[in-house]
Image (cartoon, rainbow, N blue to C red):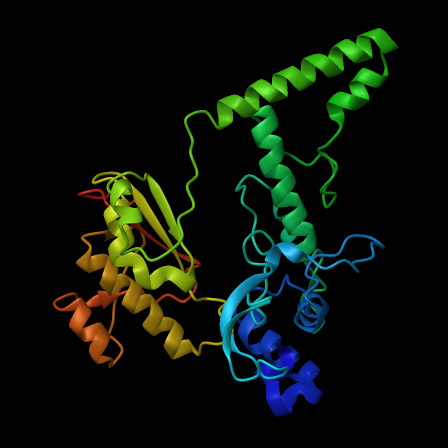
Length: 325
């Protein structure tokens, strides 16, 4: 994949990786992804490393098939489905959990920048630490129904094990009873957390009959950037009032220029407007991109989301939204 993508730049790929990081990742506020992390992922696909672990076993769950033409062998020139990794090799998997805190109550210690004003400013932590914290925070809330809080600043594991430490001070029988009670309480909390919640993953062409039975069915739908063109069809699956559609923005999408990212946001806004969805973010009155497709879609809509800091473009099927939504 790297040789095919970089072509004659392959031998200078480290410089390409560094350029993409400085001008496409760090420039837009994702500096908490360390440059060494990003360049290593671009080189060998390893994104999150912990301690001294060895990562020498391939993750075969990411293998998929894509149509292609064989270049070697006795079947050369024939079109076949080719097995391999056909996912992202430019942007990285960090932005889901590794660049921001999902809990607003957390102090800023995990996003602390040290040596400010010295010319060598850097984040104290990195994307791996933030991703680990966010995952632990989610699972802790699922199991206990409480927010995960750090007892020691900068130590993401300091909020774990308080119940276990307390139980160690008692005798073995009490320890067993306490552990059993804690396990039952956490299991019950997990059941309550996901009670009445169903997660449905849909695949295939949205225009097929598969989608007809889910019309006006969903409370929340999330569209990744690779399927955002299906917004008009997917919007019909939302409940008519009070449902939300979240579309991934192109803020950190490395292959696109600034103009292309802005144009992408405008096209998403245009399709949402045609689908009678109302944005939950503030619009900016500004000239639209000089693109016939956008002009044709927007019609009389003179505004569009021009703020490139948006990570998610969110819309609601509600008939009206307050300014605080």
